[in-house]
Length: 267
Image 1 (cartoon, rainbow, N blue to C red):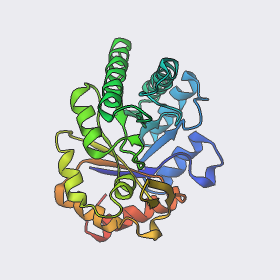
Image 2: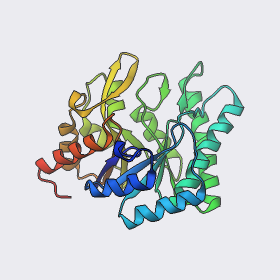
Image 3: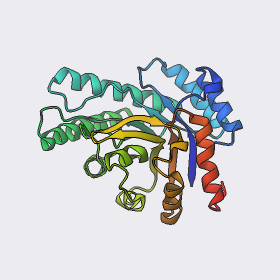
Image 4: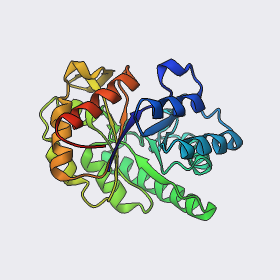
């Protein structure tokens, strides 16, 4: 199955999550990622209501944890704060029936890459234990990142998820394209995540430099070629959720859906 939808509330819904879910269904899309990027302002009671509306409208949900996360910080207090933000996101995800919580794991800073990776793995293992002890059916979703200063290459992300139970790699096609400065085969990307039965992903256009990602762009930028991504997904028969993070979240989600349809896929 291929599911496509917006990252956050469609622009037309003016910040109303419930209305955004209903509008997403009216557009003919079938998934939404609830955004806690700038903080978790949603209570569990509201998350319950959001989940009920999503279920009624047959919209699958995911959650994006706050951006202010660094599981490889030199300061222990920042690691604990980061873990709490992810755990709090998982709690809300559990209440709304979302299956995965997406987060950017951390930065290398002055640490050797191997040490930063060890710290991130340890933190994720501890969070998995917390999720399991609470009985939450939520996956940890470390995302591939777009900057070389951050942990999150395809190889790093796959290694992390192979070592930590209850985790699944989140593939951001634009971030990987930026890391590779456009020289990438998306068939190879999808081959790397074969061990997971369902893949959560993000897509958008991307502006980048040699240091990596600068900012997201509409799909019309053709950086990357999203028809190429669609072809690779259909060729590999990937079961995937695709969340649009372009500045035109619902418009470009529909554009991506149209690309699959032109390739003969029926939703």
